[in-house]
Structures are given as C-alpha cells and as structure tokens.
Length: 121
Image (cartoon, rainbow, N blue to C red):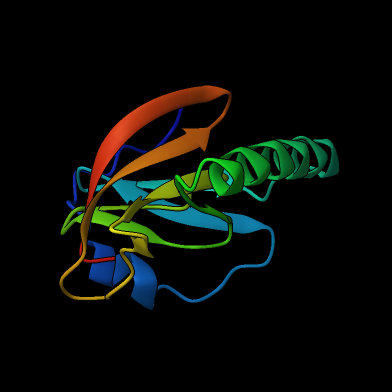
C-alpha cells in the first residue's frame, strides 16, 4: 500500500531536494511527484516532436521551444519539468526574465497538450 503524504510542498523545497540519479522531482498544487527518468524511446519521441515544433515556431515567428530538463514554476506550489514547452514571442522577444515574465506556456507531457499560466520561472 502506498504511503500518503499530506505535506504541502513548495517549489523552493523541491529544488532543495538532493539529486537522485534516475528520478524526476516535481510538485503540482503542493503534492510531491516523483517519477523515473524518461526511457530512451520516450526521449526519441520527444526529440522528433521538438524538431517539428521548433521548425514550425521558427517558420511562423511564433516562439521558442524548450525541452527537459528545465523547471517551470507556475506558482509557489507548482514546479514541473515538461518534456517540451513553447514560450511565445511578444514583440519578437521571448519572455525570459526570471522575475518579471508572464507568458502563456503550452507544455507537452505524456502525450497531451494543456495551456498553463507561467509566472516567474
């Protein structure tokens, strides 16, 4: 039977955890999520999607494509490492300032797309 942890985690606490080879640490709405590192076949699929999204975004001057590993902090209790994400261009500049950026981030994880607000990553 799995252990249920009622503690609410913050993004800061998750970042302070020691690195564990082969594991990915994230928190969503204060819940700690620990998952294995992506398999080789998943990394190949992500690479193929990255190439397609990057070409599309560059051709349309839409935004910049990023990929894991990379933390996206959506709020104080949500820190995720999406496989792929797209940061839209605003006036031809990618929003990337650590403390002041606010953007719509489309992130891809486990074969679904979902819009999420991204603040202060």
